[in-house]
Image (tube, rainbow, N blue to C red; front, top):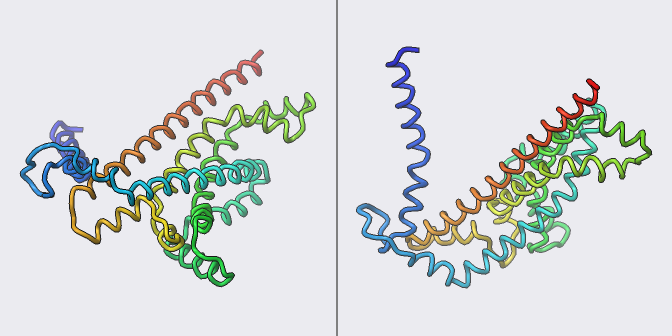
Amino acid sequence: MSRRASWWGGAFAALALAFLYAPLVITVLFSFHRTPGLSLPFTGFSTRWYDELFGSPDFVAALRFSVRVAVTVTVVTMVAAVPTAYGLASTRRRLGNGVNGLVLLPIALPSVFVATSLLVFFHSIGVQNSFATVVVGQFIVTLPIAVLLLRGAFERLSGTLVEIARDLGAGPVGVFFRVVLPITWPFILGAGCLTFLASFDEFPITFFLIGNDSTVPMFLQSLLTKEVTPMINAVSTLLMAVSQVLFLCAAGALYLARVRDRELRTGIGDIHVA
């Protein structure tokens, strides 16, 4: 590759990164703006908007409700996703792929379609919008994501250890809790972080199925219908910070899982050689 072509490629990559990240930098910057203005020049730093945000009873209530929903959805999803993914990874490929397609179908549908369908279904059976309907709606979307991640982890698990455990007298439950779970827990932790993130940021399904409560994304949407101030930037910055922290936690867990998987495969290889 010529030097000129390399220069143009680097310049194009820099422009693409600037196009992607400049709006995020501006959003964070103006969340600390001293005045209500959202246009240059920047007149000074202040935590005024964060003070007003955390002093708002509506935001505090929305934050608590978001965390409550996300924790509940994460726990329910992981309890259902772990055995489902393990079962799909253990079945015959043709049957497993068919069931896997049914499990993943909800994430292939538009969120608005899923939300509308659930709203009509709940109202047809006389169930009013509440915390429970939000959890059920988000569970339908988060379960396929968790299963997709965990099935790959279980399929990578070496069958040698499972066969050894069975030869030593361990039953299916014992194999799972004594062999599979200790090896794959980093994958489960990473999937849990991503599930929490998906629930915390979910808007369409929550908007259709929530009752009189509010979540952080809905609080942000309500601010957008009023006067536009840097408080909107403050909420967006907090959402972005939560997303990045959870994403880094998930990435760290998956990296640890890959390291453990590499060490495990190396150890099994040494056993075979011996």
